[in-house]
Image 1 (cartoon, rainbow, N blue to C red):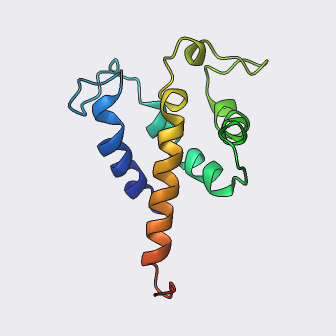
Image 2 (tube, rainbow, N blue to C red; image 1 turned 90 degrees about the horizontal axis):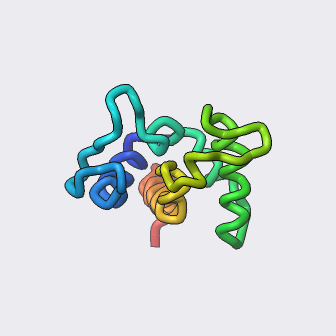
Length: 118
């Protein structure tokens, strides 16, 4: 799995419109704080790749169990102040991240050696 490809598309599609950015794709998070999308990208990609759901709620439930649980801001009761205050980039942009991960994964699979051609 090539995480750089996922991160590149996230930077192109999400960073310019991110509330934590400058409108041009540059992050304005405080020094020492990393974007949750970048910090948890491997877990996000794996969670989406292994998800079998027909609804966004199913994907969100898997996100909470597989990714949010690893975050220091997640409470034992599964609540999260950052998420509730719309300060979590993963939560804010998850539907778009889901679309990006599925699209990039499909492109990589079709470009892989031995992929079926029409």
